[in-house]
Image 1: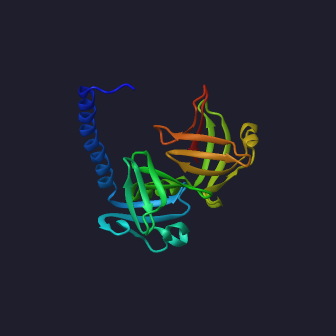
Image 2: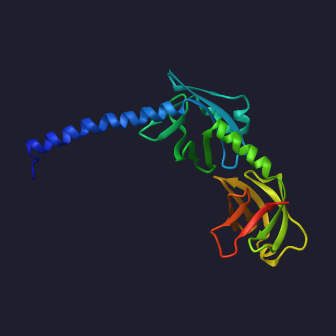
Image 3: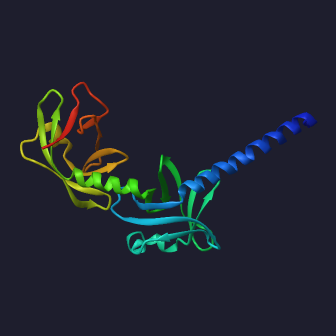
Length: 231
């Protein structure tokens, strides 16, 4: 069996000394960054709960506070007694025994995703950013036109705040729409990670991104892109 030389062992030991503090420092930075108010929600914020993460240690982990009504909006939160950082990048909301109720990992700056089996994905994000998104959703409600950049209008539609499913809202087409739109037949809409999604009953999705002119452009781009403009 091959044996390592004393020099090799010393080198590995030195590397471990260098790496271990760095890993601990990264975890410590994440813990520090998480202190404050966060919104825990379903993916499209139809059900929300404000969570305040604190640095104080308790027998159940680090201290947190849930706003009144969290258990009614998100029943699993009734089991949450504390929080912790596991490894380098897992933010854990845990029960009184220290077991995971839900684990989150960062998917974008300040936005964390967690999965609960048989329930789906939940989002943990900075409260101020979440409220800014809510304002953006309110601003989307109303009448819009689908037009081609070349100037031809394809359809008028209305985005509503009527809940179609727990995570989506109803959209209605106006009369005399182009066949391109009626064949797609969008029934629901939502905002997701900066995109506007229109969804048909069959599950087909059209995605739109905000452009520099405060309009929404269908992506991926085409030669004559489809644009949503406020009526």
